[in-house]
Length: 309
Length: 275
Image (cartoon, rainbow over all chains, first blue to last red; front, side, top):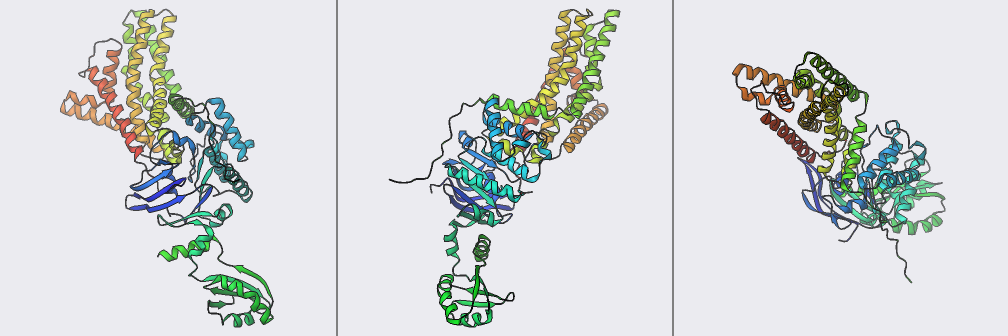
Protein backbone atom coordinates (compact mmCIF):
# COMPACT_ATOMS: atom_id res chain seq x y z
CA UNK A 1 0.00 0.00 0.00
CA UNK A 2 1.35 3.43 -0.86
CA UNK A 3 -1.40 5.87 -0.05
CA UNK A 4 -1.26 9.11 1.86
CA UNK A 5 -2.67 7.13 4.75
CA UNK A 6 -2.43 3.37 4.96
CA UNK A 7 -4.28 1.31 7.53
CA UNK A 8 -3.72 -2.40 7.80
CA UNK A 9 -5.86 -4.42 10.23
CA UNK A 10 -5.87 -1.56 12.74
CA UNK A 11 -7.62 -2.40 15.97
CA UNK A 12 -8.30 -0.07 18.87
CA UNK A 13 -10.12 -1.08 22.02
CA UNK A 14 -11.51 1.10 24.78
CA UNK A 15 -11.75 -1.53 27.45
CA UNK A 16 -14.51 -3.82 26.27
CA UNK A 17 -15.58 -1.46 23.48
CA UNK A 18 -14.05 -1.86 20.04
CA UNK A 19 -13.31 1.50 18.47
CA UNK A 20 -11.72 0.01 15.38
CA UNK A 21 -11.91 -3.63 14.52
CA UNK A 22 -9.30 -4.68 12.00
CA UNK A 23 -9.75 -1.54 9.92
CA UNK A 24 -7.90 -1.74 6.59
CA UNK A 25 -7.99 0.98 3.96
CA UNK A 26 -5.80 3.12 1.77
CA UNK A 27 -6.48 6.84 1.53
CA UNK A 28 -5.08 8.13 -1.71
CA UNK A 29 -4.21 11.66 -2.82
CA UNK A 30 -6.74 14.48 -3.04
CA UNK A 31 -9.95 14.53 -1.04
CA UNK A 32 -11.14 11.29 0.49
CA UNK A 33 -14.45 11.07 2.31
CA UNK A 34 -14.63 8.91 5.40
CA UNK A 35 -18.25 8.00 5.68
CA UNK A 36 -20.04 6.17 8.42
CA UNK A 37 -22.74 6.54 11.02
CA UNK A 38 -22.10 7.92 14.50
CA UNK A 39 -20.11 5.44 16.55
CA UNK A 40 -18.66 3.75 13.47
CA UNK A 41 -15.10 4.55 14.52
CA UNK A 42 -14.36 7.67 12.46
CA UNK A 43 -13.15 9.80 15.35
CA UNK A 44 -11.10 6.93 16.73
CA UNK A 45 -9.33 6.69 13.38
CA UNK A 46 -8.70 10.45 13.43
CA UNK A 47 -7.27 10.30 16.94
CA UNK A 48 -5.03 7.46 15.89
CA UNK A 49 -3.89 9.51 12.90
CA UNK A 50 -3.36 12.56 15.10
CA UNK A 51 -1.06 10.48 17.28
CA UNK A 52 -3.27 10.78 20.33
CA UNK A 53 -4.17 7.14 20.57
CA UNK A 54 -2.05 4.10 20.02
CA UNK A 55 -3.47 1.21 18.05
CA UNK A 56 -3.67 -2.09 19.91
CA UNK A 57 -2.90 -4.00 16.75
CA UNK A 58 -2.26 -3.42 13.07
CA UNK A 59 -0.24 -0.90 11.13
CA UNK A 60 -1.21 2.71 10.50
CA UNK A 61 0.96 5.18 8.60
CA UNK A 62 0.45 8.70 7.35
CA UNK A 63 2.77 10.32 4.84
CA UNK A 64 4.88 7.20 5.27
CA UNK A 65 5.39 7.67 9.03
CA UNK A 66 3.93 5.57 11.83
CA UNK A 67 0.87 7.39 13.16
CA UNK A 68 1.74 6.81 16.81
CA UNK A 69 4.23 9.24 18.26
CA UNK A 70 5.43 12.73 17.62
CA UNK A 71 7.98 14.06 15.22
CA UNK A 72 8.71 16.70 12.65
CA UNK A 73 6.28 15.10 10.21
CA UNK A 74 3.46 16.34 12.47
CA UNK A 75 4.10 19.81 11.04
CA UNK A 76 2.91 18.42 7.71
CA UNK A 77 -0.41 17.36 9.23
CA UNK A 78 -3.37 19.51 10.19
CA UNK A 79 -6.04 18.12 12.50
CA UNK A 80 -9.52 19.50 13.06
CA UNK A 81 -11.20 17.41 15.77
CA UNK A 82 -14.92 16.85 15.96
CA UNK A 83 -15.18 17.89 19.61
CA UNK A 84 -15.68 21.55 20.61
CA UNK A 85 -11.98 21.69 21.57
CA UNK A 86 -11.66 25.42 22.01
CA UNK A 87 -10.22 27.78 24.57
CA UNK A 88 -13.35 29.84 25.13
CA UNK A 89 -11.54 32.64 26.92
CA UNK A 90 -9.30 33.37 23.94
CA UNK A 91 -10.11 35.46 20.90
CA UNK A 92 -10.19 33.69 17.55
CA UNK A 93 -6.93 35.35 16.59
CA UNK A 94 -5.20 34.39 19.87
CA UNK A 95 -6.40 30.83 19.52
CA UNK A 96 -4.90 30.29 16.09
CA UNK A 97 -1.76 32.26 16.94
CA UNK A 98 -1.16 30.23 20.12
CA UNK A 99 -1.37 26.91 18.31
CA UNK A 100 0.91 28.20 15.56
CA UNK A 101 3.45 29.20 18.18
CA UNK A 102 3.29 25.71 19.64
CA UNK A 103 4.00 24.58 16.10
CA UNK A 104 7.20 26.59 16.21
CA UNK A 105 6.38 29.79 14.36
CA UNK A 106 7.76 33.08 15.63
CA UNK A 107 5.31 35.52 17.17
CA UNK A 108 5.07 37.75 14.08
CA UNK A 109 4.92 34.84 11.62
CA UNK A 110 2.22 33.18 13.73
CA UNK A 111 0.16 36.38 13.82
CA UNK A 112 0.42 36.79 10.03
CA UNK A 113 -0.52 33.20 9.34
CA UNK A 114 -3.40 33.32 11.82
CA UNK A 115 -4.81 36.39 10.08
CA UNK A 116 -4.56 34.67 6.68
CA UNK A 117 -6.17 31.46 7.93
CA UNK A 118 -9.02 33.34 9.60
CA UNK A 119 -9.58 35.23 6.36
CA UNK A 120 -9.76 31.88 4.51
CA UNK A 121 -12.67 30.81 6.69
CA UNK A 122 -14.27 34.26 6.60
CA UNK A 123 -13.69 35.09 10.24
CA UNK A 124 -11.58 38.23 9.88
CA UNK A 125 -14.35 40.45 11.24
CA UNK A 126 -14.73 38.24 14.32
CA UNK A 127 -11.06 37.55 14.93
CA UNK A 128 -10.95 39.81 17.98
CA UNK A 129 -14.05 38.35 19.61
CA UNK A 130 -13.85 35.73 22.34
CA UNK A 131 -14.40 32.16 21.20
CA UNK A 132 -16.96 31.76 23.97
CA UNK A 133 -19.41 33.95 22.06
CA UNK A 134 -18.87 32.26 18.68
CA UNK A 135 -21.78 30.39 17.14
CA UNK A 136 -21.39 26.68 16.43
CA UNK A 137 -20.65 27.36 12.78
CA UNK A 138 -18.02 29.96 13.68
CA UNK A 139 -16.41 27.53 16.09
CA UNK A 140 -16.18 24.96 13.34
CA UNK A 141 -14.61 27.51 11.04
CA UNK A 142 -12.04 28.66 13.58
CA UNK A 143 -11.10 25.02 14.19
CA UNK A 144 -10.53 24.64 10.48
CA UNK A 145 -8.47 27.85 10.50
CA UNK A 146 -6.09 26.44 13.13
CA UNK A 147 -5.91 23.25 11.11
CA UNK A 148 -4.80 24.90 7.86
CA UNK A 149 -2.85 27.87 9.25
CA UNK A 150 0.51 26.07 9.18
CA UNK A 151 0.00 24.99 5.55
CA UNK A 152 -0.10 21.25 6.19
CA UNK A 153 0.22 18.72 3.41
CA UNK A 154 -2.31 16.35 4.92
CA UNK A 155 -5.47 17.79 6.45
CA UNK A 156 -7.61 15.66 8.75
CA UNK A 157 -11.11 17.10 9.10
CA UNK A 158 -13.43 15.28 11.48
CA UNK A 159 -17.03 16.28 10.72
CA UNK A 160 -15.96 19.76 9.54
CA UNK A 161 -19.38 20.76 8.24
CA UNK A 162 -21.25 19.79 11.37
CA UNK A 163 -23.21 22.79 12.63
CA UNK A 164 -22.23 25.08 9.78
CA UNK A 165 -25.04 26.96 8.03
CA UNK A 166 -25.71 26.31 4.31
CA UNK A 167 -23.77 29.37 3.14
CA UNK A 168 -20.87 28.40 5.38
CA UNK A 169 -20.99 24.84 4.09
CA UNK A 170 -20.72 26.00 0.54
CA UNK A 171 -17.81 28.28 1.43
CA UNK A 172 -15.99 25.53 3.34
CA UNK A 173 -16.58 23.03 0.55
CA UNK A 174 -15.07 25.50 -1.89
CA UNK A 175 -12.11 25.98 0.47
CA UNK A 176 -11.58 22.21 0.69
CA UNK A 177 -11.65 21.85 -3.05
CA UNK A 178 -9.25 24.76 -3.38
CA UNK A 179 -6.84 23.17 -0.89
CA UNK A 180 -7.04 19.91 -2.79
CA UNK A 181 -6.39 21.70 -6.09
CA UNK A 182 -3.07 22.94 -4.70
CA UNK A 183 -1.94 19.35 -4.17
CA UNK A 184 -2.89 18.90 -0.54
CA UNK A 185 -4.61 15.80 0.71
CA UNK A 186 -7.77 15.94 2.77
CA UNK A 187 -9.55 13.25 4.71
CA UNK A 188 -13.02 14.52 5.45
CA UNK A 189 -15.40 12.57 7.64
CA UNK A 190 -19.12 12.88 7.84
CA UNK A 191 -22.16 10.90 8.83
CA UNK A 192 -24.25 13.04 6.49
CA UNK A 193 -23.49 11.31 3.27
CA UNK A 194 -24.52 13.89 0.71
CA UNK A 195 -21.97 16.30 2.19
CA UNK A 196 -19.15 13.99 1.19
CA UNK A 197 -20.79 13.11 -2.08
CA UNK A 198 -20.62 16.78 -3.08
CA UNK A 199 -16.93 16.97 -2.23
CA UNK A 200 -15.48 13.84 -3.74
CA UNK A 201 -16.12 10.54 -5.46
CA UNK A 202 -13.32 8.95 -3.49
CA UNK A 203 -14.64 7.44 -0.30
CA UNK A 204 -13.93 4.99 2.47
CA UNK A 205 -17.00 3.64 4.19
CA UNK A 206 -16.74 2.58 7.78
CA UNK A 207 -19.16 0.72 10.02
CA UNK A 208 -18.60 -1.04 13.33
CA UNK A 209 -14.93 -0.18 13.25
CA UNK A 210 -14.32 -1.81 9.87
CA UNK A 211 -13.88 -0.46 6.37
CA UNK A 212 -16.83 -1.93 4.52
CA UNK A 213 -15.95 -0.44 1.15
CA UNK A 214 -13.50 1.94 -0.41
CA UNK A 215 -12.72 3.50 -3.73
CA UNK A 216 -14.63 5.47 -6.31
CA UNK A 217 -18.24 6.01 -5.38
CA UNK A 218 -19.46 4.52 -8.66
CA UNK A 219 -17.34 1.41 -8.20
CA UNK A 220 -18.78 1.01 -4.77
CA UNK A 221 -22.17 1.34 -6.34
CA UNK A 222 -21.24 -1.57 -8.60
CA UNK A 223 -20.68 -3.69 -5.51
CA UNK A 224 -24.35 -3.56 -4.73
CA UNK A 225 -25.71 -4.33 -8.16
CA UNK A 226 -27.00 -7.65 -6.97
CA UNK A 227 -29.47 -5.81 -4.76
CA UNK A 228 -32.67 -4.20 -6.07
CA UNK A 229 -32.26 -0.67 -7.30
CA UNK A 230 -35.10 1.75 -6.62
CA UNK A 231 -36.29 3.94 -9.51
CA UNK A 232 -39.15 6.42 -9.21
CA UNK A 233 -41.12 7.35 -12.29
CA UNK A 234 -43.71 10.09 -12.79
CA UNK A 235 -46.17 9.23 -15.51
CA UNK A 236 -49.55 10.22 -16.97
CA UNK A 237 -50.65 6.57 -16.63
CA UNK A 238 -48.58 4.73 -14.04
CA UNK A 239 -50.84 1.67 -14.07
CA UNK A 240 -50.38 1.11 -17.80
CA UNK A 241 -46.67 1.55 -17.33
CA UNK A 242 -46.67 -0.93 -14.46
CA UNK A 243 -48.51 -3.53 -16.54
CA UNK A 244 -45.86 -3.27 -19.25
CA UNK A 245 -42.94 -3.33 -16.78
CA UNK A 246 -44.40 -6.37 -15.02
CA UNK A 247 -43.25 -8.54 -17.93
CA UNK A 248 -39.58 -7.68 -17.47
CA UNK A 249 -37.51 -10.37 -15.75
CA UNK A 250 -35.27 -8.01 -13.76
CA UNK A 251 -38.16 -6.03 -12.27
CA UNK A 252 -38.65 -7.26 -8.73
CA UNK A 253 -41.63 -5.19 -7.58
CA UNK A 254 -43.89 -2.29 -8.51
CA UNK A 255 -45.48 0.22 -6.11
CA UNK A 256 -47.68 3.30 -6.41
CA UNK A 257 -46.41 5.59 -3.64
CA UNK A 258 -48.50 8.59 -4.77
CA UNK A 259 -50.93 9.49 -7.56
CA UNK A 260 -49.06 9.69 -10.87
CA UNK A 261 -46.00 7.98 -9.37
CA UNK A 262 -44.60 4.49 -9.90
CA UNK A 263 -41.77 2.98 -7.90
CA UNK A 264 -39.84 0.17 -9.55
CA UNK A 265 -37.39 -2.20 -7.91
CA UNK A 266 -35.05 -3.70 -10.47
CA UNK A 267 -32.05 -6.00 -10.27
CA UNK A 268 -30.58 -4.52 -13.42
CA UNK A 269 -30.72 -0.71 -13.54
CA UNK A 270 -28.63 -0.60 -16.73
CA UNK A 271 -31.07 -2.82 -18.59
CA UNK A 272 -33.98 -0.84 -17.16
CA UNK A 273 -32.64 2.52 -18.32
CA UNK A 274 -31.73 1.01 -21.71
CA UNK A 275 -35.13 -0.51 -22.43
CA UNK A 276 -37.39 2.13 -20.88
CA UNK A 277 -37.50 4.60 -23.85
CA UNK A 278 -38.65 1.88 -26.25
CA UNK A 279 -41.31 0.71 -23.82
CA UNK A 280 -42.63 4.24 -23.35
CA UNK A 281 -42.95 4.70 -27.10
CA UNK A 282 -44.53 1.31 -27.52
CA UNK A 283 -47.15 1.82 -24.77
CA UNK A 284 -47.82 5.43 -25.68
CA UNK A 285 -47.60 6.68 -22.09
CA UNK A 286 -45.96 9.89 -20.98
CA UNK A 287 -43.11 9.73 -18.48
CA UNK A 288 -42.36 13.16 -17.05
CA UNK A 289 -39.61 12.26 -14.58
CA UNK A 290 -37.22 9.40 -13.86
CA UNK A 291 -35.40 9.46 -10.54
CA UNK A 292 -33.07 6.97 -9.02
CA UNK A 293 -34.20 6.96 -5.42
CA UNK A 294 -31.01 5.40 -4.17
CA UNK A 295 -28.35 6.83 -6.42
CA UNK A 296 -26.72 8.50 -3.46
CA UNK A 297 -24.32 7.53 -0.70
CA UNK A 298 -27.08 6.99 1.81
CA UNK A 299 -28.44 4.14 -0.22
CA UNK A 300 -25.01 2.73 -0.96
CA UNK A 301 -24.14 2.81 2.70
CA UNK A 302 -27.43 1.22 3.71
CA UNK A 303 -26.95 -1.60 1.23
CA UNK A 304 -23.37 -2.24 2.25
CA UNK A 305 -24.15 -2.19 5.94
CA UNK A 306 -27.07 -4.55 5.49
CA UNK A 307 -24.94 -6.85 3.40
CA UNK A 308 -22.48 -7.37 6.24
CA UNK A 309 -25.03 -8.23 8.88
CA UNK B 1 3.34 15.76 -22.88
CA UNK B 2 1.78 14.47 -19.69
CA UNK B 3 -0.50 16.10 -17.19
CA UNK B 4 -0.06 15.33 -13.51
CA UNK B 5 -1.77 16.53 -10.37
CA UNK B 6 0.02 19.25 -8.42
CA UNK B 7 2.15 18.06 -5.55
CA UNK B 8 2.10 20.26 -2.50
CA UNK B 9 5.38 20.93 -0.73
CA UNK B 10 5.39 22.94 2.46
CA UNK B 11 7.44 26.11 2.08
CA UNK B 12 10.48 26.14 4.36
CA UNK B 13 9.96 28.35 7.40
CA UNK B 14 12.37 29.06 10.25
CA UNK B 15 10.96 27.50 13.40
CA UNK B 16 11.67 28.52 16.95
CA UNK B 17 13.04 25.98 19.41
CA UNK B 18 11.30 23.72 21.89
CA UNK B 19 11.71 26.09 24.83
CA UNK B 20 10.04 28.94 22.92
CA UNK B 21 7.18 26.67 21.96
CA UNK B 22 6.69 25.60 25.57
CA UNK B 23 6.97 29.21 26.71
CA UNK B 24 4.01 30.08 24.48
CA UNK B 25 1.92 27.53 26.42
CA UNK B 26 3.18 28.91 29.74
CA UNK B 27 2.29 32.46 28.67
CA UNK B 28 -1.21 31.44 27.64
CA UNK B 29 -1.71 29.52 30.86
CA UNK B 30 -0.59 32.47 32.99
CA UNK B 31 -2.93 34.73 31.05
CA UNK B 32 -5.69 32.18 31.45
CA UNK B 33 -5.29 32.26 35.24
CA UNK B 34 -5.29 36.04 35.40
CA UNK B 35 -8.94 36.12 36.31
CA UNK B 36 -10.55 37.60 39.38
CA UNK B 37 -10.41 34.43 41.51
CA UNK B 38 -6.68 33.63 41.30
CA UNK B 39 -5.81 37.34 41.24
CA UNK B 40 -7.84 38.01 44.37
CA UNK B 41 -6.12 35.11 46.14
CA UNK B 42 -2.76 36.45 45.00
CA UNK B 43 -3.47 40.01 46.13
CA UNK B 44 -4.78 38.77 49.47
CA UNK B 45 -1.65 36.69 50.03
CA UNK B 46 0.67 39.53 49.09
CA UNK B 47 -1.21 42.02 51.27
CA UNK B 48 -1.38 39.85 54.40
CA UNK B 49 2.15 38.40 54.27
CA UNK B 50 3.87 41.63 53.26
CA UNK B 51 2.05 43.65 55.89
CA UNK B 52 2.66 40.99 58.55
CA UNK B 53 6.39 40.79 57.83
CA UNK B 54 6.87 44.57 57.57
CA UNK B 55 5.00 45.23 60.81
CA UNK B 56 6.92 42.44 62.59
CA UNK B 57 10.24 43.81 61.36
CA UNK B 58 9.23 47.35 62.37
CA UNK B 59 8.46 46.30 65.96
CA UNK B 60 11.61 44.17 66.06
CA UNK B 61 13.65 47.17 64.96
CA UNK B 62 12.18 49.11 67.90
CA UNK B 63 12.69 46.37 70.48
CA UNK B 64 16.01 45.09 69.12
CA UNK B 65 14.84 41.49 68.62
CA UNK B 66 15.87 39.02 65.90
CA UNK B 67 14.97 40.34 62.46
CA UNK B 68 15.14 36.83 61.07
CA UNK B 69 12.46 35.79 63.51
CA UNK B 70 10.40 38.75 62.36
CA UNK B 71 10.76 37.87 58.68
CA UNK B 72 9.99 34.24 59.41
CA UNK B 73 6.92 34.90 61.57
CA UNK B 74 4.29 34.87 58.76
CA UNK B 75 5.58 31.52 57.48
CA UNK B 76 5.33 30.06 60.97
CA UNK B 77 1.59 30.58 60.86
CA UNK B 78 -1.04 28.22 59.50
CA UNK B 79 -2.46 31.25 57.69
CA UNK B 80 0.43 31.18 55.20
CA UNK B 81 -0.26 27.58 54.26
CA UNK B 82 -3.93 28.37 53.93
CA UNK B 83 -3.25 31.36 51.68
CA UNK B 84 -0.92 29.34 49.44
CA UNK B 85 -3.53 26.58 49.35
CA UNK B 86 -6.12 29.11 48.16
CA UNK B 87 -3.71 30.46 45.52
CA UNK B 88 -2.87 26.94 44.33
CA UNK B 89 -6.49 25.81 44.23
CA UNK B 90 -7.73 28.86 42.33
CA UNK B 91 -4.85 28.97 39.87
CA UNK B 92 -4.00 25.30 39.44
CA UNK B 93 -7.31 23.48 39.60
CA UNK B 94 -8.20 24.16 35.99
CA UNK B 95 -4.73 23.77 34.51
CA UNK B 96 -5.43 20.33 33.08
CA UNK B 97 -9.14 19.91 33.87
CA UNK B 98 -10.12 22.80 31.59
CA UNK B 99 -8.18 21.34 28.67
CA UNK B 100 -9.51 17.84 29.29
CA UNK B 101 -13.06 19.11 29.73
CA UNK B 102 -13.05 21.16 26.54
CA UNK B 103 -10.81 18.58 24.84
CA UNK B 104 -8.57 21.38 23.70
CA UNK B 105 -5.76 19.17 24.94
CA UNK B 106 -6.16 17.34 21.62
CA UNK B 107 -5.24 20.53 19.77
CA UNK B 108 -2.01 20.90 21.70
CA UNK B 109 -1.07 17.26 21.38
CA UNK B 110 -1.73 17.11 17.64
CA UNK B 111 1.14 19.58 17.28
CA UNK B 112 4.74 18.45 17.27
CA UNK B 113 5.08 18.42 21.05
CA UNK B 114 5.24 15.54 23.47
CA UNK B 115 2.92 14.98 26.38
CA UNK B 116 5.91 15.54 28.65
CA UNK B 117 6.46 18.97 27.07
CA UNK B 118 2.83 19.86 27.51
CA UNK B 119 2.83 18.82 31.16
CA UNK B 120 6.13 20.59 31.75
CA UNK B 121 4.65 23.82 30.40
CA UNK B 122 1.54 23.42 32.53
CA UNK B 123 3.63 22.63 35.63
CA UNK B 124 5.79 25.66 34.94
CA UNK B 125 2.78 27.94 34.69
CA UNK B 126 1.20 26.66 37.91
CA UNK B 127 4.58 26.58 39.65
CA UNK B 128 5.43 30.14 38.63
CA UNK B 129 2.06 31.36 39.84
CA UNK B 130 2.49 29.70 43.24
CA UNK B 131 6.10 30.85 43.41
CA UNK B 132 5.03 34.46 42.89
CA UNK B 133 2.63 34.13 45.82
CA UNK B 134 5.09 32.25 48.01
CA UNK B 135 8.24 34.26 47.40
CA UNK B 136 7.08 37.72 46.34
CA UNK B 137 5.62 39.11 49.61
CA UNK B 138 8.65 38.13 51.70
CA UNK B 139 11.03 39.70 49.18
CA UNK B 140 9.00 42.90 49.04
CA UNK B 141 8.91 43.05 52.86
CA UNK B 142 12.70 42.58 52.97
CA UNK B 143 13.22 45.26 50.33
CA UNK B 144 10.91 47.76 52.06
CA UNK B 145 12.51 47.09 55.45
CA UNK B 146 15.96 47.63 54.01
CA UNK B 147 14.95 50.82 52.22
CA UNK B 148 13.39 52.20 55.42
CA UNK B 149 16.57 51.32 57.29
CA UNK B 150 14.98 48.87 59.72
CA UNK B 151 17.30 46.03 58.67
CA UNK B 152 20.70 45.83 57.07
CA UNK B 153 20.90 44.93 53.36
CA UNK B 154 22.60 41.66 54.36
CA UNK B 155 19.69 40.66 56.59
CA UNK B 156 17.24 41.70 53.90
CA UNK B 157 19.07 39.58 51.34
CA UNK B 158 19.18 36.61 53.72
CA UNK B 159 15.44 36.97 54.33
CA UNK B 160 14.77 37.06 50.58
CA UNK B 161 16.89 33.92 50.19
CA UNK B 162 14.90 32.20 52.94
CA UNK B 163 11.64 33.12 51.20
CA UNK B 164 12.99 31.77 47.92
CA UNK B 165 14.05 28.43 49.44
CA UNK B 166 10.73 27.92 51.20
CA UNK B 167 8.84 29.17 48.16
CA UNK B 168 10.48 26.70 45.77
CA UNK B 169 9.74 23.71 48.00
CA UNK B 170 6.16 24.85 48.52
CA UNK B 171 5.65 25.56 44.81
CA UNK B 172 6.87 22.10 43.76
CA UNK B 173 4.63 20.42 46.34
CA UNK B 174 1.48 22.36 45.46
CA UNK B 175 2.14 22.12 41.72
CA UNK B 176 2.14 18.34 42.08
CA UNK B 177 -1.10 18.39 44.08
CA UNK B 178 -2.78 20.71 41.59
CA UNK B 179 -1.73 18.79 38.47
CA UNK B 180 -2.62 15.33 39.70
CA UNK B 181 -6.05 16.39 40.98
CA UNK B 182 -6.67 18.51 37.89
CA UNK B 183 -5.88 15.53 35.68
CA UNK B 184 -8.54 13.28 37.19
CA UNK B 185 -11.54 15.46 36.43
CA UNK B 186 -12.96 17.52 33.59
CA UNK B 187 -14.22 20.28 35.88
CA UNK B 188 -11.92 22.77 37.52
CA UNK B 189 -14.42 23.30 40.33
CA UNK B 190 -14.16 19.63 41.33
CA UNK B 191 -10.39 19.80 41.13
CA UNK B 192 -10.34 22.93 43.30
CA UNK B 193 -12.56 21.34 45.93
CA UNK B 194 -10.40 18.20 45.81
CA UNK B 195 -7.22 20.22 46.34
CA UNK B 196 -8.72 21.80 49.44
CA UNK B 197 -10.21 18.54 50.65
CA UNK B 198 -7.10 16.43 50.19
CA UNK B 199 -4.66 18.92 51.74
CA UNK B 200 -6.83 19.92 54.68
CA UNK B 201 -8.06 16.43 55.50
CA UNK B 202 -4.56 14.94 55.23
CA UNK B 203 -3.16 17.67 57.45
CA UNK B 204 -5.90 17.24 60.04
CA UNK B 205 -5.69 13.46 60.00
CA UNK B 206 -1.92 13.42 60.40
CA UNK B 207 -2.06 15.96 63.24
CA UNK B 208 -4.61 13.91 65.12
CA UNK B 209 -2.89 10.56 64.55
CA UNK B 210 0.60 11.85 65.40
CA UNK B 211 -0.85 13.45 68.56
CA UNK B 212 -2.46 10.19 69.65
CA UNK B 213 0.46 7.93 68.79
CA UNK B 214 3.14 10.45 69.79
CA UNK B 215 5.03 9.36 66.68
CA UNK B 216 7.07 12.35 65.46
CA UNK B 217 7.89 10.66 62.15
CA UNK B 218 4.24 11.00 61.13
CA UNK B 219 4.73 14.77 61.14
CA UNK B 220 6.63 14.41 57.86
CA UNK B 221 3.23 13.74 56.33
CA UNK B 222 1.91 17.01 57.78
CA UNK B 223 2.15 20.01 55.46
CA UNK B 224 2.13 22.58 58.27
CA UNK B 225 4.86 20.82 60.28
CA UNK B 226 7.02 20.50 57.20
CA UNK B 227 6.71 24.12 56.10
CA UNK B 228 7.28 25.40 59.63
CA UNK B 229 10.38 23.26 59.96
CA UNK B 230 11.72 24.32 56.54
CA UNK B 231 10.93 27.99 57.26
CA UNK B 232 12.96 27.92 60.48
CA UNK B 233 15.94 26.43 58.66
CA UNK B 234 15.58 28.70 55.60
CA UNK B 235 15.69 31.83 57.76
CA UNK B 236 18.65 30.45 59.72
CA UNK B 237 16.78 29.87 62.97
CA UNK B 238 17.14 26.93 65.36
CA UNK B 239 14.17 24.62 64.83
CA UNK B 240 11.99 23.89 67.86
CA UNK B 241 10.20 21.14 65.89
CA UNK B 242 10.92 17.42 66.12
CA UNK B 243 11.21 17.16 62.33
CA UNK B 244 14.44 17.53 60.39
CA UNK B 245 14.06 20.42 57.89
CA UNK B 246 16.20 18.66 55.27
CA UNK B 247 14.00 15.58 55.44
CA UNK B 248 10.87 17.76 55.41
CA UNK B 249 12.10 19.53 52.28
CA UNK B 250 12.99 16.21 50.65
CA UNK B 251 9.56 14.80 51.48
CA UNK B 252 7.77 17.80 49.97
CA UNK B 253 9.93 17.91 46.84
CA UNK B 254 9.66 14.17 46.33
CA UNK B 255 5.91 14.24 46.89
CA UNK B 256 5.57 17.03 44.33
CA UNK B 257 7.69 15.16 41.78
CA UNK B 258 5.79 11.90 42.30
CA UNK B 259 2.45 13.68 41.93
CA UNK B 260 3.56 15.38 38.71
CA UNK B 261 4.64 11.97 37.40
CA UNK B 262 1.24 10.59 38.39
CA UNK B 263 -0.42 13.43 36.45
CA UNK B 264 1.68 12.50 33.41
CA UNK B 265 0.70 8.84 33.79
CA UNK B 266 -2.94 9.78 34.08
CA UNK B 267 -2.84 12.04 30.99
CA UNK B 268 -1.09 9.39 28.95
CA UNK B 269 -4.03 7.11 29.58
CA UNK B 270 -6.86 9.48 28.83
CA UNK B 271 -8.95 8.15 25.99
CA UNK B 272 -12.25 9.73 25.17
CA UNK B 273 -14.90 7.81 23.27
CA UNK B 274 -17.13 10.44 21.71
CA UNK B 275 -19.31 13.01 23.47
